[in-house]
Length: 224
Image: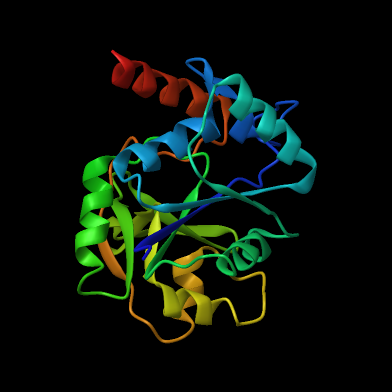
């Protein structure tokens, strides 16, 4: 029986990256970002059930990448929907794990320690997400004025976000609305409590050229 199903979302088109190809296919150290992410989960636990959501028009391109890199990691490609919500909804139909995680395909640097913390917490909590404390000062904008807020009241949210399968599937039975910011916020609408664990700082979401440079430094360090 499969214990963990991992949905890796890769539906972005890379507008902020200014790239001709979607950001998940941009290469770092000779491999596309998405391939780094897929390998990360497989090497962490090869028994995990892996899914990747991709825009229909880019599925054949992904197949070419796999062939070029001699990648034989077992995974299923799911056609993406109009929004991230719909892509995950599509993937959930195929998940058979007791627990399900959703991860951004352009986060290839989540650490094994973060994954272990999530999995350990999942034994006692039904919804677990990694977060980081805010280091910079924050100000809240209201109309044309701003005011300082206490940064200790806030956390930066990362992925993967882990859930008991029944809870996440029930959450995605709710209708789509523009206020859904992540899977945890949707689960929270069911009245479920979200448990926070410590993430890792290098687990950045690569969305800009600057992020790309930072990620390249970390991946080069890992490959040494």
